[in-house]
Length: 231
View 1 (cartoon, one colour):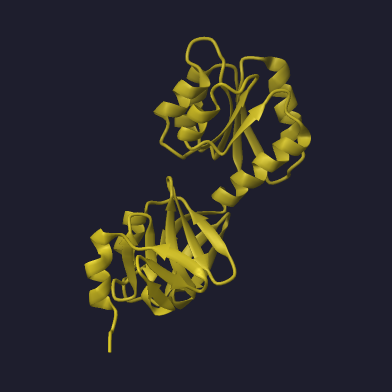
View 2 (view 1 turned 45 degrees about the vertical axis):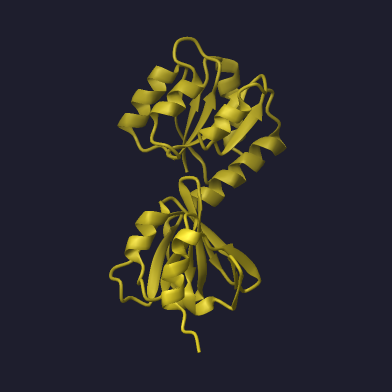
């Protein structure tokens, strides 16, 4: 992942730089001492992850995060106090690190970022395809549609759940819905698209898919009933 450090304190930039060296998959693109400088750098270069201080002269870290495309680049906030934690996570922050940052805490934040980064897009060539392709870091992986249980929206990301694993895609549920074959995948809730072929049972307002409980909202119940073959 290509990283950017943004902090007005040179000493702390050095600390984060040394921590980044612990993981060979991280590449430091630049260090910035102001949010304005960082914003220009983000416009000029591809940045995947920002380590962003909150309290800085002029534009602070929260203000910078608000003008970025929500959820990308990914942001790990860094600060000396807890008072902005709620606002930070409202901005879809990957993590919120309190200074001084420990090595263990830093590496934990990196693992969270990697989980999000490894699958950012879903591509389906046509609506009759039996497969989808997801991007896992620099690897494109092929998934059989029949193995997908459901899609779940989580902020600006979508979780693709299979029987024994899941992937995180940087997309919207609406975008994915438009790419999937409608005879197999159906929206049953504002946050869920299910694979009709993997539904085990229905209990009231809940679908059971391989032991997963999926809510069905009243707005989608009628459409669901149309697609279920009742005897």
